[in-house]
Each structure stands twice: as structure tokens, then as C-alpha cells.
Amino acid sequence: MLGIPDEMFIRDEKIPMTKEEIRVLALSKAKLFHGAKFVDIGSGTGSVTVEAGLFVGSKGKVYAIEKDPNAVELIRKNVEKFDLRNVTIIQGESPDALKEIREEVDAIFVGGSERLEESLMASNEILKKKGRIVLDAILLETAVKAMEVLNSMNYNPQIIEVIVAKGMKTSKGYAMLSRNPIFIIYGEKP
Ligand SMILES: C[S@@+](CC[C@H](N)C(=O)[O-])C[C@H]1O[C@@H](n2cnc3c(N)ncnc32)[C@H](O)[C@@H]1O
Image 1 (cartoon, helix red, strand yellow):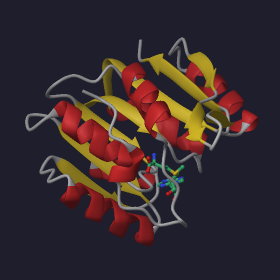
Image 2: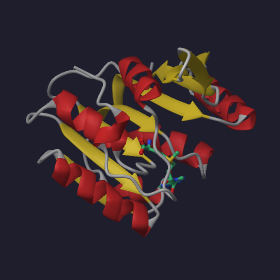
Image 3: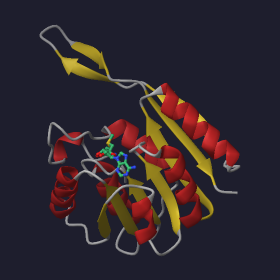
């Protein structure tokens, strides 16, 4: 089941993390299954990597790609905390780092959008037919670029924008605190 509470991850204030509700929604669009092979590009804190690793189980596999060495250390800690044996961490930048994956995969999540166009093209090379690419983006420009590239590859991309407001307990009741709106873009390889 998806939905690890954010508080369960080891955090570093300088390293971003995809929040629980967005993580769950994004991974639902990846259509993961037990035994699936999954790539997390720009793994950051490792929350998507861990969530996917638990979901795909011991017969599945997760490749976590991250260019920032401090984030790589944090991903390693979170993978250890959740006792996952099915995660391969690749320190490097996508698309170059994708070359280390020498098998076809079922789904790819792009949470790190530097070199986005090249990353999407290289992702297409290692994705199985009917495999899914999912991205999340804060910037409008990133979302537009992702839609353009996925359209050019005939992935029939869909886009949603999600705004999560979390209840915060005050002395008088619960006040809803909004987080940043996030775009989630997803498409399927023809
Ligand atoms: C928003 S964070 C991802 C958070 C992550 N999904 C999580 O839940 O912890 C984006 C990360 O992508 C990394 N990144 C950005 N572009 C990248 C690229 N082309 N290759 C590898 N890592 C990249 C950044 O260093 C950053 O750590």
C-alpha cells in the first residue's frame, strides 16, 4: 500500500522531498505492480525511491539516480532505514547516468528536471512498450516542456495540477495550510 508518512524519512533541510500525497498520486500514475522495474530520476531524499521499492517488492527493482553527492548519502540512509535490498543507487546526472541501466524498465519517474528533454529521450530508450513516464514539476515552464517532449514521442501525455492543504491544529480548531501547487504529467509509451 502506498503512503509512507513524511515524518518517517530521514531529512536534510537542504535536500528537497516529494510530499506524501503528491508521491502517492504520482506513483499511482506510474501503474506500479509487484515485480516492476522502476527508475527514479532525481531521487533527492529518496522518498519516491523508498515508496516504490516497498511497493514493487523483492522481485522488483528500483534504480535511484541522483547527481548531488549529499543527497546520495541521504538516499542511502533512507534505503537502509526501510531495509530495502532491491534499490540500486546511481550517483550521476541523467541522461548520462541512465546508461548504467542495462535492462528495460516498466516505469520512470522524473523528479529532477535539469536536462529534462535529454532525460526524457533517454528514458524512452530503456522503457518497455506500454511503460509509463511520470513527472512532477513546480514550474509552468517545466510542465510545458515535458508535455511538448512527451507529445513529440506520442506518449499521449496527461497533466493535472494538485494543491494539497493540510490541517494544522490551532487553539480554536483546524486551519488548512496550502502547499505549493504541483503539476503531475504522465504518459505511456506507444
Ligand atoms: C525535487 S528533488 C526530488 C525529490 C525526490 N522525489 C524525493 O521524494 O525525495 C529533485 C532532485 O533531482 C536532482 N536532479 C535534478 N536534475 C537531475 C538530473 N538531470 N540528474 C540527476 N539528478 C537530478 C536534484 O539534485 C534534486 O536532488
